[in-house]
Image (tube, rainbow, N blue to C red; front, side, top):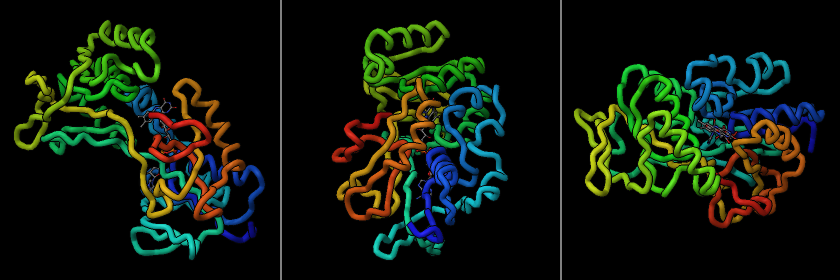
Length: 313
Ligand SMILES: Cc1cc2nc3c(=O)[nH]c(=O)nc-3n(C[C@H](O)[C@H](O)[C@H](O)COP(=O)(O)OP(=O)(O)OC[C@H]3O[C@@H](n4cnc5c(N)ncnc54)[C@H](O)[C@@H]3O)c2cc1C
């Protein structure tokens, strides 16, 4: 690649920031533009459901790099900028404000967004999702004000949020459609241990239930109604039911592009960061545009091949 041509990265989070670091680390001297729709500089999300949510770690601990790092390494960090579309023929990214950024190589690290509940009442105030640092702040504030919350979904995020609620002295009911929490990812033996651990800490864990409605009064959630008619009162409802991919215009469409991704494991997060650096070198985009690459965490989508393995949430 021409050393003067820009390497544009869309998605200013862990994968994007680490990719920029790797490019510089491996001697790429051309312009790097890192585009992110969030207004925070790249940060890590795991603390948002752990020490940061528990109030044990401060804001400064979550960032991937100190603020000056970007200027010091010649990385043009553009925050609050959403990539709306990609024009592979013109080698341009079009931003939501109408401006365009030319690229020689484009790396998509747009990650994923929380899957939304679609039951009646799901749009009520007090129905919360945990993805961004502001979400973690809001849930932390909720725990300070509420005495009882419900958590929909007993995946990692649901369980960790419930644990944080209990640590804050809040009553919590977890509503899980499956037979056990984490059954699909950990298997029965470990799932039983997690279920017991949470119940031992006072979590009201209800498995094999279907959420039918978020009940509300004055536009704010005040409980959850289950398909069997049971109503669980709650001052807030935190939803952790998986992720969906962020789409960046046509190029992130699943058909016509084979990508690559790293399977993030919850137990080997640090190791994965090292692997990510290697990914940038190995990435090969087989279909429409050989100058477009993808990295980071992508949910499994039918038809999307990710080097032999499906990415899970
Ligand atoms: C609360 C929480 C706890 C977690 N805990 C763990 C854990 O303990 N262990 C573990 O392995 N994983 C954990 N994860 C998952 C881990 O954080 C993700 O795997 C990781 O964030 C993936 O990084 P990424 O950079 O690929 O994507 P993301 O973190 O999803 O970042 C993508 C970025 O791209 C931006 N973006 C999207 N579309 C556009 C666009 N069109 N234009 C501009 N910017 C865009 C998004 O706003 C976002 O900032 C956790 C996730 C959450 C939410």
